[in-house]
Image 1 (tube, rainbow, N blue to C red):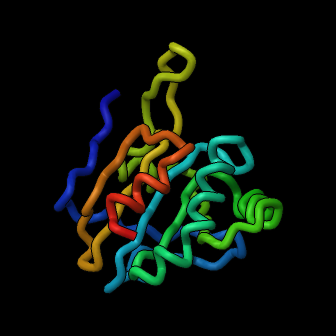
Image 2 (image 1 turned 90 degrees about the vertical axis):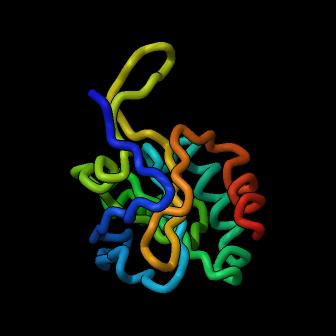
Length: 156
């Protein structure tokens, strides 16, 4: 099964998802600002925790530069709330239980895991411009060091 991969210049697929408090968050909420949307496999796993904590540690600098951050996983809002509390996360965490948004972004599908082909969340990060177009589409990113690399690329 091949997935569609987004490219710079593509319109970012719209979304409306619940966050860890039960509020609905949509891509339109960020109109006029740049937003980093990143997809991760599972709350409270080592790599995902590293990535979420790195984004949290960088959030003030990113927001000062006009960049918001949203993390999306298939976890239920209740698990996301536990993740936020456990690790003192300040980024927005959204639940995509049916994986429709991940699929639209090409962040769900076949991937290699321990030498086997499996279907799952592909750790991916997108920078969406204030105009709603994809600026950067990064697939199969590594959790450790990713946020620092992204900040360098964005000049933040």
